[in-house]
Amino acid sequence: MTRFVNEEAALEAGFRIVHEAANERFALLDETDHVRGVAHYRFFDTDGVNFDHTFVDEALRGTGLSGVLARHALGHDLVSGRPVKASCWFMAGLIRRHPEVLADGATYLD
Image: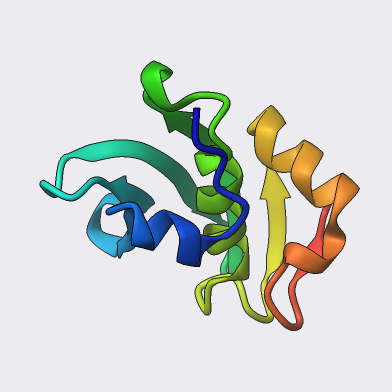
């Protein structure tokens, strides 16, 4: 099973991540543009972002794509300068272990 350690490796294998602002999510797409994973968020208060759900297709679990998706979402301009919550256990764990994944100026509200 291929293990993806960064977004560039995922892109070379045909996976890409897009921000779907209207759906309040980041979507992991395969080479046929089929959604294979999501990192969903909701806004809170006036400027906060809460990542409340992360999912990757069962067939792709263990490949590192969940982490690639999460890192992309947490480092995105959407997060920059905002308070961030993570009611999703996966996102919360990633932020606690690697606070550097947050975009510049973001503050994690544990």
